[in-house]
Length: 65
Image 1 (tube, rainbow, N blue to C red):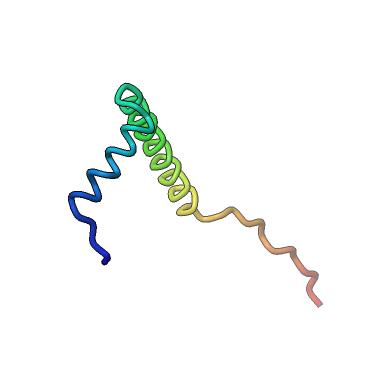
Image 2 (cartoon, rainbow, N blue to C red; image 1 turned 90 degrees about the vertical axis):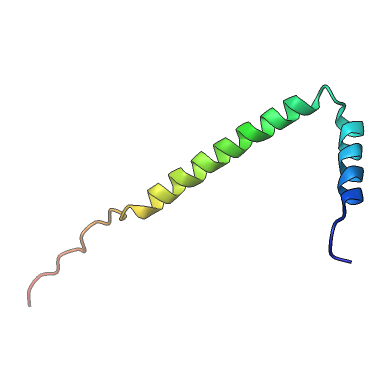
């Protein structure tokens, strides 16, 4: 009960083709690829941004007692 067989994959592919149609599938795949590339570049930008030390202002000076 936790594994997928070839029949499961065939049924899923059949349902997807019925829902979107064979002419629409390349367009859907193209848009998914673009979205994945954008997500990957944004994640890399966030990692680079978080890797830099944050600029914190110096602590306020206290008068000597």
